[in-house]
Length: 286
Image (tube, rainbow, N blue to C red; front, side, top):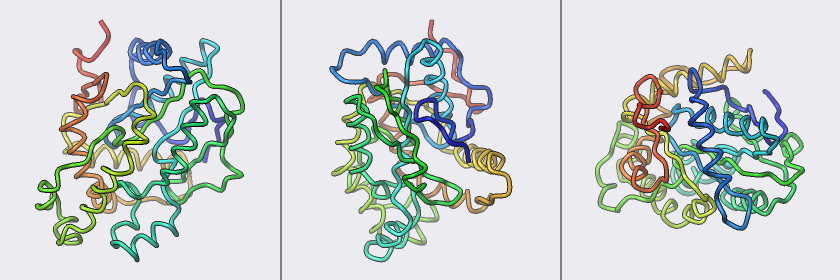
């Protein structure tokens, strides 16, 4: 697994086949640096699985470095609860909570401490999560941001997404919910957690960009491509097979669809993507 310095991170392989246009990367960097917020500004990059969030985050960080600036990068994936804590939730609340991803499977106290320290320009160790091992890396392996960053890039698959109305939870959205959450306890618990606990984290984001896919139907294939990239980046290690990926994305489907419904009106910048993950012409800088 690749280690990083805490700035231009390369924890995940690029999920966008060609990267984003330099003009779009420059726009994201310039818009964030132009904020007058009284602290290190935070660019949030939200988008469903495989849309290229980590790719854009790395490009923004690299563009900042080319200007002699520092960009600290973190992902909401870095804040997943360790496996023993998720297993405790599975035992005490619902079995589906053993699987990382949905609201309630993140260490929000750690996320808030990390974002607050970065916004204040403090030196801090940045958590990292090993997806193939499904476990947080030991703290001794976390990279450090030892100097004040000029901006923070925070990426994640549902950043900024609000909770659904309770009535929307009555009907399952997929086979997983139908067969393994027939009473709706899991999805209602996740939704309540999203409503109660995550707005404080979203409030740390100063400007939010949303990478908008054409629909949820592209996500299983894009997530499978991402899984293959993870394997290629870590030879000799095993991950999920295709059937496991198909099941895995169902854990994300409900809130992904909520993100598609709500984030275009919430985000400060929406980048609409086609089925090849290329920005549509209307989304590019003029």
